[in-house]
Image 1 (tube, rainbow, N blue to C red):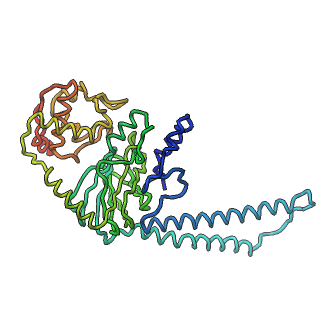
Image 2: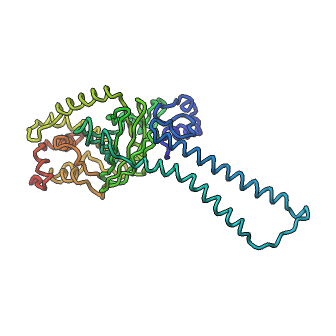
Image 3: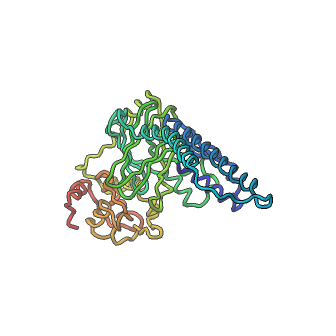
Length: 393
């Protein structure tokens, strides 16, 4: 299983460069990577425990076979060397030997395949789930929709904590926290000892949902749905990452799963439903320019700043928004870009955002930095745009 110890690799490289104090300051992250980790992550699900057992069982069997075969080979070379007068034998094939070296490996393979098949079948048994959650991969964040079970109807986007991104961009990680590049604004929350089914898909390119402590790794493919499941045995925080190279921000796409007690999960669901009800926007509401700009600033920081930068200047192939002809031009063109994307996904589509969030971020970009257009986009215009009815200008 692919390691998620990105930060440990960074610390190692810095140590080679002479910044050794950081490596000494690093400590294990419960539910995540550990310093000098050699084995698999500590298992907190039955499937993960079985994977650990299979890993060691097959490693031991292969090691024994390796030692046995090479011991016989080297002994034969030493025992029958030419300097001792040994002469090469001339003999015909032996039916007994043929049968033995066919049957014995076959038995070994069967003995290895039986427990492996049992675990593989169990991994794909997603029936009778207590909670079903759809995990959608975006460049570069995760969207979670609670489909069935307690929490049904909840939906949110999980993005790398902005302070960690700023720290990474600065190049100075000497004060990096223990969960560096693994902290998110909205973790995936699930109950303990409940079967949780994860349905994976993607909005743009292939991603992969992986949490090593749960023993799960499932690709998220645009236009397809896949599923996996887990039943966490302990409460706590567990970490993973997108395990499929999905673009330049691949390293900034962490997964944080918070496992709560059943009572704690119920309280969380109740709280989130109250928050969702309070935040639910009426797309027919008419906003003032200043209110939309203030709302758009938050939307921009959470979704756009990672590529276009907080100063709107862009970076490398990422276009600048400050002074951009698209931003300063007709409103309809910019609305089309944020809804449909551009350049084969280089600029991703943002249909998953609400009409109010889209209106706010477009209005913010048109009236921030040196862009002082005074143009305002109301949520109702995006409601119409989703059906193909863009404003005339």
